[in-house]
Length: 314
Length: 256
Image (cartoon, rainbow over all chains, first blue to last red; front, side, top):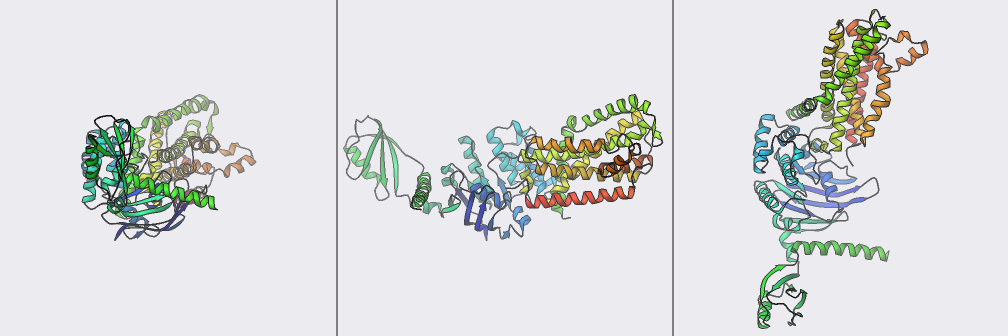
């Protein structure tokens, strides 16, 4: 059974904006799924419809087989959502917020207290449980929203940019926590602008742009489609001009930093052999951009260019 | 009601109660201060010169009306402030994404308003006892009229909060509709003092019926038919509840 299944989902807002234009999407049970797209692509609208915060214009959405038109309460009981914007009562304490959230899902207060302790401890918020939430740092507020979303132990957890504005140390601890949650059987849908995050965590991916799904694949298959990667080489000695190496396109971004494009058919050993022969010593090397980011930009920019060409032709 | 719904309903009410108690300086104290001033000025200073009304000393006559006025404004104010605050702060989404049906959310907030109306009503009654004797003619009528009125204005506050887009719109109805209707609703006088046309106009004011039903429970006198007053209150509560639920189901004011 799919955790989420969406067919022909359309949303046109009152101001005429077509946020979704017939989305079809399946997310398998147990998946860690990335939903990526530029700002305004329709990600939050899609999540809003699934969680009933936005009325759809047309289409069908089911959560673990429960149609949101006919079995909305059953569908909502399966979902935990961590929205993009902070949306808890800033004047309540983390303990109250989490216990109340459990109550909205019918969980008795005695059980809710135990779960609140469990999740607030796991997300390192237990020491802050009785303070006013307004006083929490940005990262703590994000973690509190995750703890709140888990209180009814949902089968499907939807995270809309959960690590926005969170420092790298906390972000990595959140990744570990989300991996554990997913390993315990919870399906996770993640939207994020940190593509490294999606590449690290997710097994499957959909890219949405202009209200349409422009790509849907396994993460590993999608990354294999990247034919050319750009590497940045840090050199020991400065160069006045890039060396002329047969078959390689090299350019200097500064005298000690050189960029080289390597296609999938080429290998790095040959390149390093040629560099050594030319007397160039390489101290370190890194990808210029994250691999997923490179694919993402190509897909999104390609789509934008296609739209522009179609507009010009019309 | 299923266990999930019952726990959900209780959670909303407990949260509302917690809010009332947490900010007691805004929710309980101001109406007590206001009513004390009414009793001192209208009851004690001016009331002595007014003499009797409806066969009772003026202070005793206005006491039920002042209690009812506090119940009305606080029931309305509680729900409009709490629900609009939840919309404004977006934490209403906690409820909207939950499996609780809309009618239960409306019922939970309305009960929260009734809780505050009742707490304030009791506090104001204690103040009234410091100034006058509160004779109870029919306790059942007092309780039913008080609770129904509180429910009606809690639902009214909910509707206001649904439509309000900013804090100005939260204050418009209390300022321009609720306060005039309350002051012309027989809190301070019997409509028998008014000219005929004004009496007829007063009958259109629903608050007149509520205040008089409540006063009947205390003093046994009323300017209106008690049966008609309760009929009106029951119909108003049912209509407002149905309207609030229908608007929630449509997503008015809460969903894009």
